[in-house]
Image 1 (cartoon, rainbow, N blue to C red):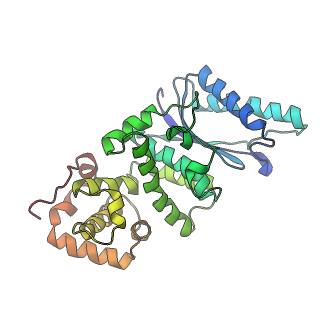
Image 2 (spheres, rainbow, N blue to C red; image 1 turned 135 degrees about the horizontal axis):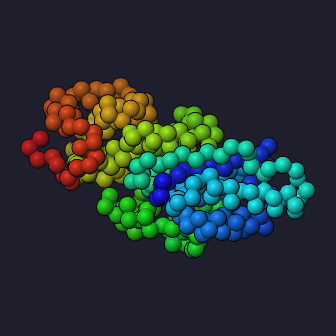
Image 3 (cartoon, rainbow, N blue to C red; image 1 turned 30 degrees about the vertical axis):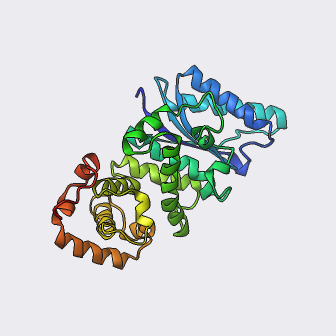
Length: 299
């Protein structure tokens, strides 16, 4: 469908490196850029790992499979000629999962830009030159990359400009680090596909719930790391309640993100639900879609 956004994972065959030689890096990018231009597709993010390419692609009219084939086919044939390697450079199947809710594009872009960190390549995504993260920060320019839609979607959520984008990515690192410490989902491909399936289910991501609760209580997500503010216990209880009851997440996963024990969060939910029931009875969709700032009066 025109305008659809896909999270795409390409994996090389038999553990071949994505770029066998440094000169293959600009070759692949040039071929990808031609495919995007030919089919009027837009690339919102990319990350080049050792044997994988992670992409966020928005199609125009051509199907995503045709765009991918126009990128990987010529690149594979070029490598075959240059290095005398028979067979296709990439695996027979690629992963392309439709992002049904386009408002989740910033989360998809953030996930892709944090992939090198989760893979142990760098400690900070800004240090990795093989992704579009630095272009979002204004440190370099990639003519075949578009950043406007992500910035447009982030601004109403309080993340304005490059500094807002930087804060948005920083917020996601804590959750992804907790996922890695708990064993994650194995490979970066499996982790990305798991996240995309969760988004495809229509359930909001944990970070989206955190942002909505913080807006309602007049906080920002960074406040959750503070030692004490009056609204913090209520905020953590609300996040745990809505994430587990409406978001389909486990209490253990929420506890890892909030750096609290599951038993502590469970007790907080019981206590604050008895004291402030209207916060807990609110449907999750309403909380996310209509979260006025500082709604604590009379509580």
